[in-house]
Length: 138
Image 1 (spheres, rainbow, N blue to C red):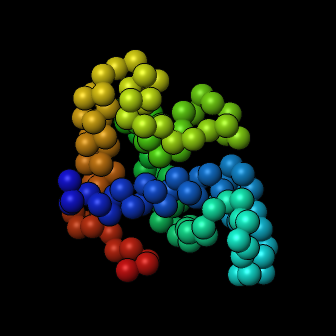
Image 2: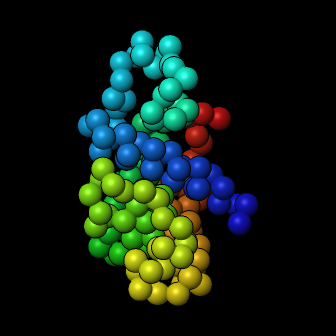
């Protein structure tokens, strides 16, 4: 679904932000500005991908709003982008569709249906007056 690519991009940004928050606190980097500017060939964190903190915070609020009303969509968001919330954060990794289906005790087709519902719910929650919210990076 090409119409929800912007939601997928925001979910990826949210996952990076949440992972950094759990590793270093409040979604901020664990290294200083100067160390990030220089970089290294043996970087343990992989390539530096910038994170938009404001968009990630808004996406986090939208995902957390699903926790009580649509818990199955909340679990799909976490499992597919961050990792199983039942696993400690230091061992957490994003799961494939098959692994998500196994964790949720359902079929893979159900996970795909839940992913589509998740994208629809987040598109509605993150849109302003029925239009897509403008990104700060556009």
